[in-house]
Image (cartoon, rainbow, N blue to C red; front, top):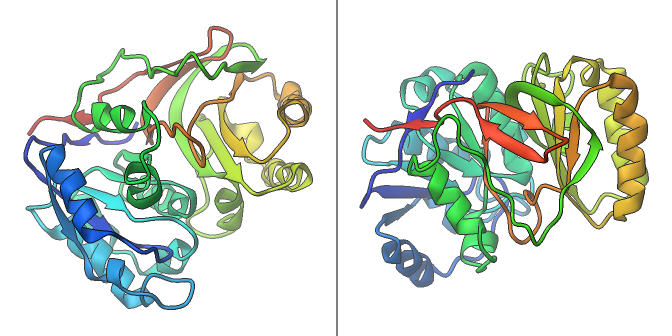
Amino acid sequence: MSIAVPALRPEGTIALIAPAGPAALDVEKAGQWMRARGYDLRIFPGVYERDGYLAGSDKVRLNDLHKAFADPEIDAIFCLRGGYGTPRLLDSLDFDLLRANPKPFVGYSDITALHLAISRYAGFVTFHGPMFNADLLGDKQQPTESSLFSLLRGQLSAGSELMHPVAYPLTTIEPGIACGRLLGGNLSMIAAVMGTPYEIEAEGIILFIEDVNEPIYRIDRLLTHLRLAGKLAQVAGVLVGDVAGVDKAALEQLLKQTFEPLCIPVLSGWRSGHCDPNLTLPMGALVRLDAGEKRVVLEQDVVFRA
């Protein structure tokens, strides 16, 4: 079970960093959006920079990340976008600094590398949730925003069910109930850090996976990679998020082929990832997955009130 982080307090300050790729930001719109929700926005230098496919140099992006965690006036950290770049930072992260200053950290896609590293070496809950630019400023439909803030503000505690919109039916691939830490994220990134000190710790977890722009044979390849590495045999259950661009029937067939021999619960179709709406999930938190009843329930508090 990972350590809960301080709840996002009313009228707090939220940091915006760009640990991966660059994106144009409407600074005025960004500030207005945050003030309308009762928060100040502090934009860190890398958000304004562009170094090819990276938002600034590795040094700039790493410094922003460290300073945002170290600053006692920062209550939560949002990522500008994904793309690519976070794996380049992993072997320079100051995990002692992060461990001493836990706070809500939000992002997905390429940010998966940071979720995995923080979970393994700093030990606190992070949030697989919307990017600031494309998701929040992009006006993705509810419950994108409400899912995020309900978790960060502590409105959901141990025993609470993570609600899923009825407009997007879930699919039970394999029924059953399992408890474990929810961990994972972007499937391509999970596979990319295999064989490194930052690879996913899979023993007893509820594995969460999502991806985008990967044809079905590549999804097969990525899952096979995890299976051959012995990771899938270690997990207690699987929650499959959005796999954008893949035929649903083909994906369900692949999931059945992959996980049926393991006799573990598998639930598919959770609206989290490169999709609209994009629901927030607490990475590292202890949860109960009931694939037959299509439910995910928190088994621990993910934030606490200081």
